[in-house]
Amino acid sequence: MKIWSGSVVSKPVYLAVGVDTDGRKDVLGLWVGDEGEGATTWMTVLTELRNRGVEDVCIVACDGLKGLPEAVTATWPKATVQTCVIHLIRASLRLAAKQHHAKLIPELKAIYTAPTEQTAEQALADFTASEWGQRYPAIVRTWQSPWSEFTPYLAFPPEVRRVVYSTNLIESINARLRKVTRNRGHSPSE
Image 1 (tube, rainbow, N blue to C red):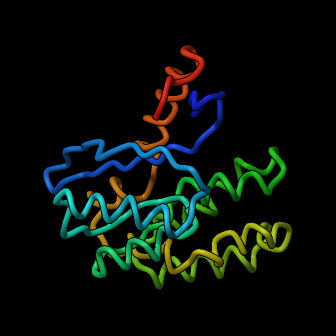
Image 2: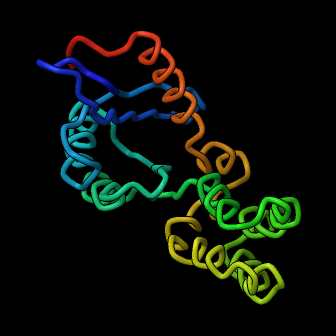
């Protein structure tokens, strides 16, 4: 976000959205940062949320943000960190030729819609051994690298999975904020 602070500077804006047990979604806050994403920034944000009464967090969905998993564990030790499945799919497709996307999507879907972690592991092993896994080993690594942050949601029932597998809600809010700030130019201050 562009902010006037003697001159126009770009600063990161952090957004947190909560979903309660009734499925109600609330924007918990926006934070303007000075530094890049990291454990210190996220500890500040999560500590503020905890101090404001956010407790008993079940799962935190994110897109591989640096320092966030550690900050979540330090703030809410029982919470699970979930990598955004949509980001894994998009990252995978960026690594493949466009003409292969239609054939890759069902192969990847077998991984992220698996009923159990063991079934997902087998689907990934099958993909790895397949023509597509051999042609695109970087896609295999894209799924293997965050595996421990990808699989937690597989333990939840389908109703919960639909809520936590993606950060699209946050991305939608971010897109609206970008539109408003683009039309406005910059904010007068933080």
